[in-house]
View 1 (cartoon, rainbow, N blue to C red):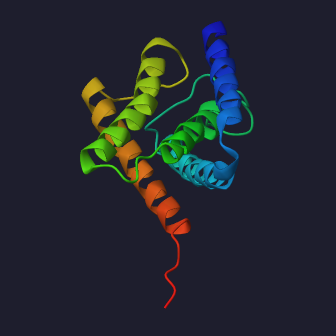
View 2 (cartoon, helix red, strand yellow; view 1 turned 90 degrees about the vertical axis):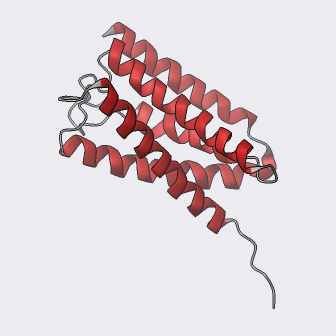
Length: 160
């Protein structure tokens, strides 16, 4: 349980300290992207817990919810926030796809390795193959939906 607490503290400190490096002109975009991903993460986490697809044996707030707080509501939205801030809008489609794969992989492999070596995540009745395929597809879908929302939110209206 000490390892899990250390991981929670480390990712919380990393997430909060990374926000210092947000450029002033992009704070609005960072906040909206953080909140958009935060909302979808909360929604999908609650559904996965209620359907029994994932269990969080070690939680910060044991009596309030069955979902971890720091990874779900701070770390993953921070990763998505940096995904949006660093997104290569004026680059080739290959660079954009590589950007998606890189950020989705960071999130997924954190989930996978913490499920393998700690008690932060448990995927009952799942094989490694099903964890990888469902995890990547869910996170890609979530990134895509949130990216579409952020693109729509910040699009400039064309004057007629």
